[in-house]
Image (cartoon, rainbow, N blue to C red; front, side, top):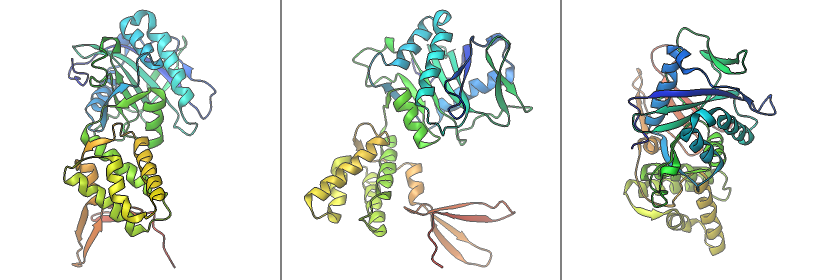
Length: 355
């Protein structure tokens, strides 16, 4: 059974709860699930497409729960095993847990809880949606939140769009102890906002990623850059060199631990053993906070990492040649289609200008 199978999706149950940390003191919960037979075709298609697109997104990650019998895990298992008895009440408890860990600055939205079958097993999807121009929700006369279409068509999620939070979870009672760290109990998409990603998979789901070397390499580079942003004792050119050194290890496909690489690369910049030890520990801690999981990896250059080192070459109509690094350490340069007609816009963010 492959948890990523999604060619054939049969929706069995759906319920919607509202998560509004800005204006409410508790989750606003539906009192019953939505009659699947009465779902508008456009809404059904939207839910199915959102599940498919989230599962197949190249940034979705296989994961396992930190241990057995965590709160959300137990509730999901009961919903899958006996949905007629547990689906509504357990989904309400899931909404309460998510509300309790959601930052007060998070966007107002809802979670759509979906029990579905992919032709091999029953799975539970948890989809976080923000209100938008095409879809919203309101409570009907019997206390159930239902979708309201405001446009002629719902937006179909694409692999390039910024999907919201998503998890699909299987019945983990069927996973043996020997399989626990290798067989995925869930898939998590954490593409939107870093803080949201951390609280969604770490605080809400209590999960840890079963990361590939590609994902680990990306998390490593994210962590290195985040750590260097708050280190005042290093010069900007030194920070660039450190990032390039980590990138070289990935490019060469080296096998290493974060500790080993940090110690090797940072040692020229810290002469005192204690200072070096503090720097290594700080970098490793930041990388772990990014969700790298296991700190051992084989380096891989992915398109996402490569973009950070890419040089964009432009030849203007006036035969002016411009080479632009796609991403500096503290300055991000973007080249995109112009909003004002033919041509390109060069957008430079986070630049200190001296007049």
